[in-house]
Length: 157
Image (cartoon, rainbow, N blue to C red; front, side, top):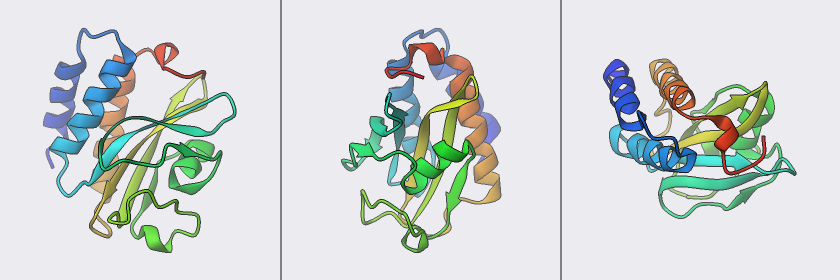
């Protein structure tokens, strides 16, 4: 993958649009269309109780609410670090939203030192996400975060 080109394309896509939700929706669609072997890409945003609630995404219908700290998404949010799972069936606390998913990468969204959500990407292929993908996807999430104002997120931070 040429992540330099993808970052530049994403920056162009999000440039000049102040609406957080519109940018999140376009970013989810961008990830789903541009990354090969992906069957789901989207957001979960934290609510006041700390649960993660489904945001804009592309792919099959998904779990609407993930309990605080649970699953791959909850782990990434709680630990405020990217989590890559090569085999979701071997992840003890994996929450199955799409049985076709075999591997997953989740990158937390951070503002003022707190996770206000995550970007979640699933693949039907085991061990789909390499170290280069992790770095590139973190760069894409960084470009998204630079383009948006987290205070405009649809949930409290």
